[in-house]
Image (tube, rainbow, N blue to C red; front, side, top):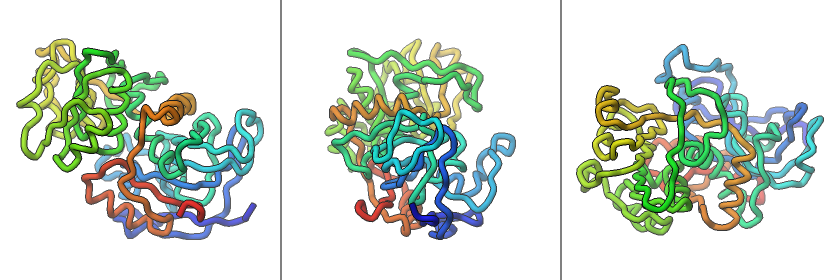
Length: 340
């Protein structure tokens, strides 16, 4: 085992240019942890929020951030060493997962090695490579916990109401706004796996991609306002969120639900008057749910899409790509030499 490794760190908050590859000590796994040789790590919105210092998060909700920081929560790799008490994994196992979230500053997957709680990991499906496996954890767990099973009792810091997924099945009408992105394209597939009728909202260039994932309808938001052409929905999963999320309230049937993945604004009086539900969750690491996602990946029921792949040294370029938006799937860092 080497004593040092490559890691991408930031010593100040700012744009992609603050990400610098450096040599740092290889971490040691603590009790209940494994050391993972990272083959691929995935970019997620918390990475660039953290890189910027979370300026838009209210101070009282902002976690403590001590520089320098290694970014990254999602990993796919190989177990290199076991901490005390770990019995579910062995050295050489291929694993993937989202680490330690919602404490992203402690995950540190933009590196050659990472120490990972064994409970956050599942065995990587043999049928997909590390790059595609790394694209799944945060986006897949977010879609799973919103749509299928929350899996934890931690309240969301953004609301008092308890989130309850809508039972999905034949006849359920689901709209996914932002359907081509990381969470959106996996949510489309999970809803179809449960038998729902899925309406995907994205720009027209993603139409064939989304139809190929199983979407029943695709609305090009550059040509049509989705709220003007759909009605009687059971569920809107709004991956975009923001100040325009309330425009989807009239599309819901009475008793329907609007689930904003990111912070959204809507009129609570209109929510009450329409008899609909608006709730959300804060995604949390969960190895058991990762194992369920692994099964769907193995069977082909869910297929992660890759927007682009960068080397670890090009993490700043990867963040610059994320800042451009309009992604189709996920951006991944290929870390181990054999995956480059």
